[in-house]
Length: 249
Ligand SMILES: [Fe+2]
Image 1 (cartoon, rainbow, N blue to C red):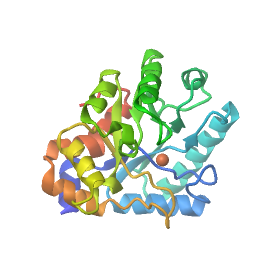
Image 2: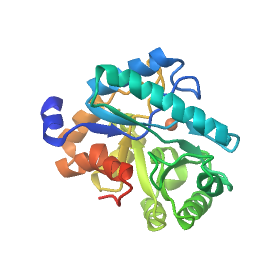
Image 3: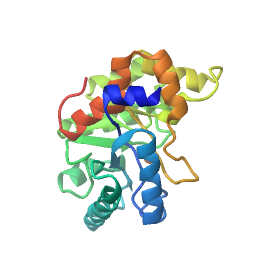
Image 4: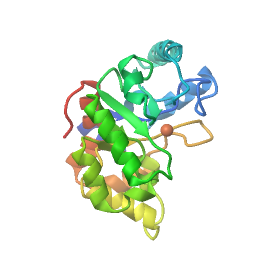
């Protein structure tokens, strides 16, 4: 079933992945990077944007190192899978200097586009999120809120609309769509997807033994419950728009 879906819609693109070796709590070494990317390919991904954690403390030299690691990982995986593409992005923790750091190239946008994958403290309140998203938008960036399901303050639907009005788009983790339909969290996530509030899905993969890029259960649920164009937009098309620095569907 998955093979049929992939043939119809092309390869999926992962926009949230801690696969660069030794830089955060993701892959420990290049061997693990390769294992994670091979696992991704077996799940139907044809491209990944690497998103190591970035915070106030990361400096400019860090970005050069990340670019170098991305290039090495890309060369390695392309020996086996020449059509597979790997890009550099970052999962940036919001702080007041972030827009300035992005402008100076001391923090990374997604694949060189204006899109910025941003996260906040999970306990942050709505006004903090709204202020951060507004600041990024006013600075000319296109904020993508990472794993939107983590923020308790966003469980009221109109709050997602409020951030969307500020130019924010939303990324949800595949893993959050699987689990018991009795779980309020799973039900909330599935409802956001069904109602078209989520633009991007990502694996947020870390390690082969911790949050591997396993999308099978989530894809089964999506194929059964969500219209095909929406699945296509969240798994591939909007990520392609991001890489091309275009508006999303
Ligand atoms: Fe992450």
